[in-house]
Length: 126
Image 1 (tube, rainbow, N blue to C red):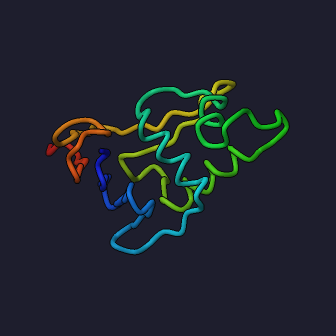
Image 2: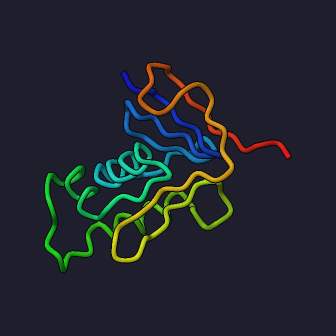
């Protein structure tokens, strides 16, 4: 059983109901946007290829000229307000893919996928 909630700064991700909130306000995400976000979270701090994301979300590689993945990443960044002021970033890795980075984080309990119902990510006090 996977954790139901993941908290990163003021972002709350409900992995069961596939919902996202910022400051307790719902953020409208499409199913594909949520799938991309969840895949990146499962692979946090790792570089993941475009192909790996496409396979996980769409079941296979998209047309090479398709900008679908880039559009979804852009929408996720915009909707989560990932403007550099948060401890979470989605970084483009040129000619490879993407990397979801959690900066200066302490994960309470264990990693994603543990059976705990809640996981909170907080910054180090400093």
